[in-house]
Length: 288
Image (cartoon, rainbow, N blue to C red; front, side):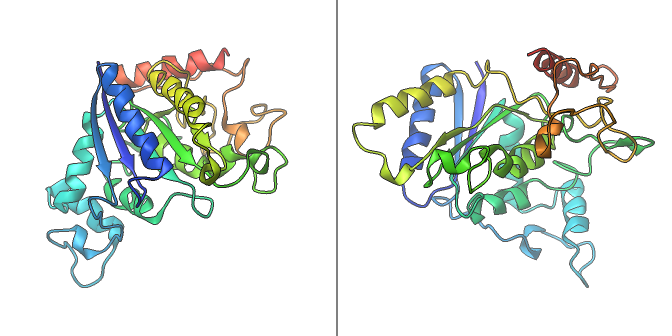
């Protein structure tokens, strides 16, 4: 069986979001998986990225968070809470982010978890840069071989988040999280589970919604991931711009999804098993 990390961000233990988190834990354990939960509010997680994240500052005169992050990760002088969350990510085979959508994004405490935990050398600034290669990112990286999924509660109605809805397509709103945060260091992203009008869910509606969520959780390791194009798979040019002829008929963020008939992506990582697995998975998605 596998290891699953749930990163949960809701201040109320009796909320629908928290109920879904508990249901995910129950379902995963029933399947035989090992589960860890980082309950950020319960842990009073420090959301602000500042000097306190580094046990020693390489350049104490002026804070460059990126430079200090790089030094701290390389030298083992990160704040202990940051290092502990990184170890959980490395332990996990899948990561589930559980949160309510607030102002079209994640709560500040969860964004602060990303800001601090996704350190230079851990989630970015990884891999060789040269020629057309801009490091190991977008489908490659230290978190390759893992899956990720969002569990999101939303106050608005589903039509508001549709193709022509006033709030914009949900996939576009979640793009910075799914593509920019989770796919960037190499994770494969399973389509999100979203509950609309979450503050109006009735007791009578809960059983059907809970069963739908159980179904998605049971499919965490078997459902097809979103077919994002890999950065170094051959679909982007030396400026990391999608090559002509790709993304035809689509616009916006959807041009970055592999389509049937696209050239096969090839990732050259010296035969690394996890990258080869990711490449095979992306190839399978291109044949949908």
